[in-house]
Image 1 (tube, rainbow, N blue to C red):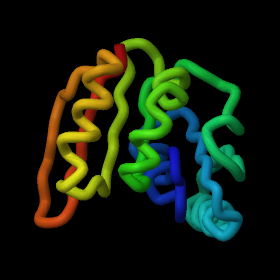
Image 2: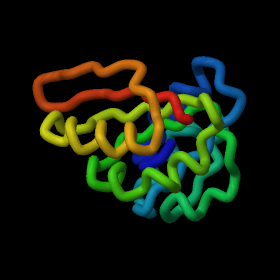
Image 3: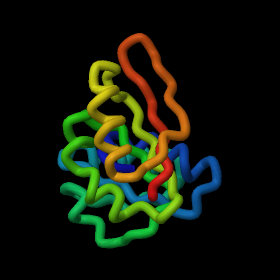
Image 4: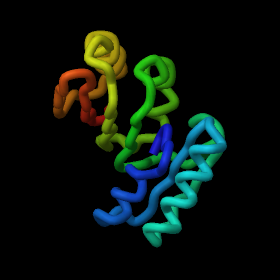
Length: 130
């Protein structure tokens, strides 16, 4: 869960059957909130304060990212390095005006767009990693 914030995506993944969840965020308040939400929901999230470089592990089947689009554009290599080949990357909260830039960036990285859901201000993109 990249940009874990409150940890809600990691909590939901665990509640829906994920074996484990790792959350990373640059904000210490977010890590604290995610830890509290994990405890309230009786799940265990491995939390890291910092950016993706704090997560040494690779081969994640699913990466959830609800972060600013400019961050998604700047970390494509780091994100893909941690995603299993053929794994999924779910990007949520992406402003629609970033659609072209994000799509171009991830298509150039040989990702395949599986789904796009557009809401009035934001969209969700689901990618398959190369």
